[in-house]
Every structure is written in C-alpha cells, then in structure tokens.
Image (cartoon, rainbow, N blue to C red):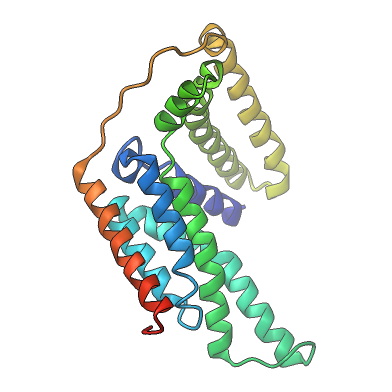
Length: 239
C-alpha cells in the first residue's frame, strides 16, 4: 500500500508539481531541440552513462526544481535497478553472460537515463502551447482538451493518494483500494465534463496568452550549445 502511494506521489511530483512556469514557458522549437540533443548525447557517453544523467539533472535543477529532480530520479531508478540487478543475478546464476557489479551499475544508469529523459520531456510540455498549436492547425474544437487534462490528472492522482491513505489507516490491502481510487478518478472526470460541457464543445478561436521567461530561454540555449559541442567533438573523434 505504502509503495503504491509512494509511486503515485512520485508521478505527481515529476509531472504536475509546477504550473506554467520554468522550462514550460520556453518556445516549443527550443524544447524539442533540447530533447533530441539530450537523447543523442546518450551515444558518446554509452560507456559512461552517469554523465548524461548528471547533465540532465543539472538542467532539471535549474529549469524546474530540486523536488522534480529527486522525484524523477527516484521514479526512473525503478526500471534501472530492476534491469541492472536482474542482469547481474542472471549472470551470477549462469543463465547469461557473467557481468561485474560495475557493468550492472552501468546498465542501471543507461536504463535510468532513458526513463529520466522521458519524464523530463513530459514535465516541460506546456498545455497552453499545445492548445495554441491545435488552434493554428485548425483544431480549435480540440484545443481546450490539453488544458482540461492538465487540470484533472493532478486532482485524480491526489484522490488516488487519499484513497490509498484511507486504506492504510483501515488496514486494507492495496488491491482493495485500487478499485475505489479508480472509480473516484472516473467520477471526477465526469464531473469536470458535465460542468464544462459547453466550453468543451465550443472551439477556441483566439490563441491563449503566455509569455516566455528569458532566463529559461537562456538556460535552454546554453544546454543546446553544450550538447551540440559534445556531439561535434564525438563525431570528430575527440571524445
């Protein structure tokens, strides 16, 4: 029960802790470029995967917050620990090629980085920018959906955490609380739909206002420059 509650809490902190601030305000083109370069940076440091994890942690620390870094690293470490530990145990038991503890640790870092980057990409998505994009391509009737989703999902996760906490106090098993927690999320979404029916059925015609923060644009540009330099040096065979 406590483990499931902790996982839900980590997801909440990783994706919904901050509002329309920080890296979310950076223009989409720069964010997409940063994500692509961050994915490519994995290649030069394949044998040293802890370096891209460190780079992305610094970007997250400066562009989001320390709570996001801690929660996202903890969440993305779950598959990393699983793959690293099972690879080592299978090799130790003779079911696969034997690997050293250092090799298992590198597997952990590689898997963790992939999950970490996915969480980072999800955390810097701006529902306002996404809505404006839908308006620009002629899908104004769908433009309100990202805003509603980003408002209802945190509330749904909060209700699930409360339901799990109630189960803990009552001494119930975790699987018995998943049903009520899921039903609570569905009920909340229906409530939101009923109260926003006309708004959801009416297309948005004007772009939603938002402003980019210069310091975060500078952070992304600096990160792009650093990662581009790393990739260029790798192509030239210097790193």
